[in-house]
Image (cartoon, rainbow, N blue to C red; front, side, top):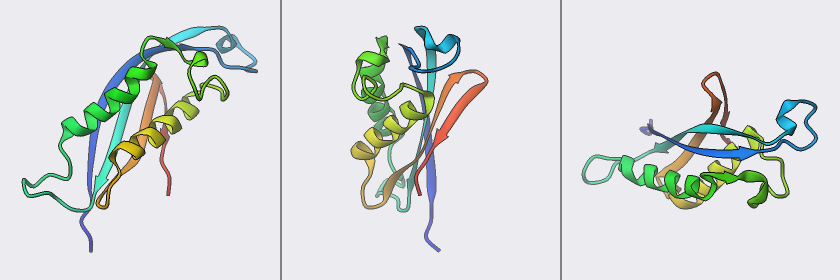
Length: 126
């Protein structure tokens, strides 16, 4: 059986958004302090005994989050065209981080995006 190591980092960013066509208060501009959890799976270890250094995952997540931090998401591609829902934002992080981190033995496995302390979405692909 092939080994599988799941590594996870947590970071955050602050951003505002408006949900288009939403029948409620979230159709008005409002902000969140988003918490982002990034899970990466490794099927092999390097010579040091790591699947990947946590700081590599953290830096990649921060680089992507920095594009959104303290911004109005509706003005930033792709959210100028697609609704900046938690689901779409989680998918965005998954795609962007997959492009940065995926390799022969390393793969982004899931993104969990917390909109509030009590509400989150987990996005993965299989």
